[in-house]
Amino acid sequence: MFTLTEDGYRGPAPSWRPGAPSVWLVDTDRAAGAARSLAPGILDASELARVEKLVFPADRDCYTAAHVALRLLLGAHQGVAPDAVRLTRERCPSCGGPHGRPATGGGTHFSLSHTRGVALLAFADAPVGVDVERVPEARVVTEISGQLHPAEAAELAALPQPERLAAFARVWTRKEAYLKGEGVGLAGGLNREHVGTGPLPLDPPGWSVTDVAVPAGYAAAVAVGTAGRAPAEGHDPRK
Image (tube, rainbow, N blue to C red; front, side, top):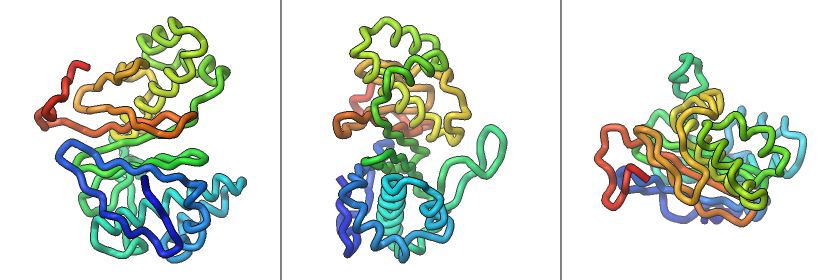
């Protein structure tokens, strides 16, 4: 858990083992006051402008807390002030546009996701993606299930209604974490790869997907690239 005060963040810098991302959870409601105080001296002009464009105060607080946390953690890892962290975008692997994975130009791979109340950040030595979402309403599940991989849609259809919402949230966050890690996001297509709706995720080729423990009412997952790396000890690539 990431704890933010008006004096900033004084915890350890992100660190990780090869192939094992460092994942940080932020309670954006609790961090909102401190984040608002720190933001003018930490966020860049484009981030501050984005905050101002958000209509609802809860969304502004969530975005601010998430991005202040990101800069503080990246700065701690790189040994620079948070406002000196250089945030860029890689080229999209699909179209070549400037909207691929976020990057710092310093070799650190990271990913950020937030929804009202919670933000999730991941750092790794390989491409990484993370996603956190609220468990959706039944209407959303009905509307979107057909866009998933056929095997995932069939798995959801076979579940009793009370279990379907949590299963959909699992597959959605797994799929988005993987697609963000690839640098294509949802434009890559929800029907790509079978990551599964059950208790254990399935790994797309070249990726390891793991569910992340988050507060009740949310679901989250992280995906880290494994191409060219031997499986971690104890990891079964067939799961």
